[in-house]
Length: 384
Image (tube, rainbow, N blue to C red; front, side):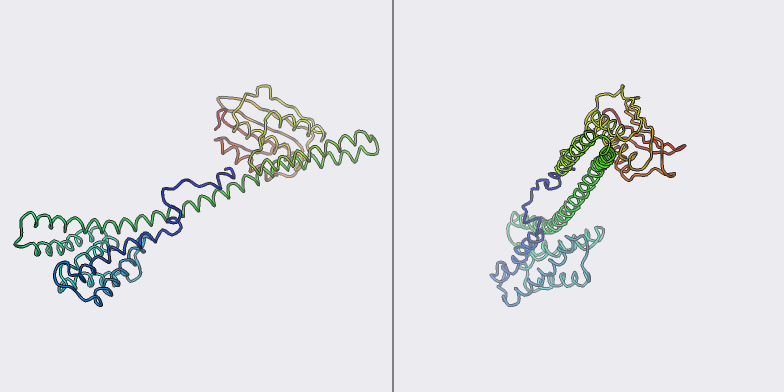
């Protein structure tokens, strides 16, 4: 995972303000659906006008109850005391119809929406069917004595439009819930990406600096021993020591930008030089080294670097062998050294070797037997 990947986010079809405040569209949806019935009642669209001082508070109470149910549905739950609020909503929806009539029937939208949000489907569906009888009956009553076409039109309107508006409320709550889940998932993915990036940087720094610092320490000790015997040789070791330090600094900067590339052949040559300087007799068997894709080569190169560092820091090795072989579509690296201290395989950086191997569908293993430590890594030749 690169730093640029952790900073970027996938494009969204929703505006940024909706992602930050996803409840406001749902609140805005409730306003016109709640306001239409009191407007019809006050102007007397169907029948005599009603008093605004009664209609407006009743509509506001209904809108508040429905919004409470909708916001809870957007959280994937039912609000506390929902039975009481649901009963109050039904009373405010259907009781005023007795004296207000068809002007108040639009509030049935809220009753349908709350029924779907609060009740289980096997209970909600038949109850919704019963609730639909109210607008159908009111519209049928209003067209008695009129034309047949007008009666059919109003019946279709009463049967289709309220469920559509109720579905808009239910769908709006569901959309807000999905947006919240999406936002939470994106936040979690960003945190995961940051964590993965920290692990990568920590692992790469450990493997890079482990060998570099071991080389600096080794060359510094060698320069001190040569100082009184061969000043020219000691000077050469100090110069090479500063070169290693500069390379380590460049490597740290490259790791921070995720631009650090390692070469299997270069790491083998570097291991040979470092082990030789440490006085470890090393045998290499890499004649069958195949051309490898980047992921497989990186995995084996880091394994050689960490294996060499582990040898220098945690053993008193006199001999070492490094073998790279291929068999049945896999490449196997094996590092074996003597001089193991204790009975366990030391070196926390070996965990990073295992992580890199698993990342390319490979395996790694360590073993200690008869005072010899063995690190083996296998990766597919076509690792991706």
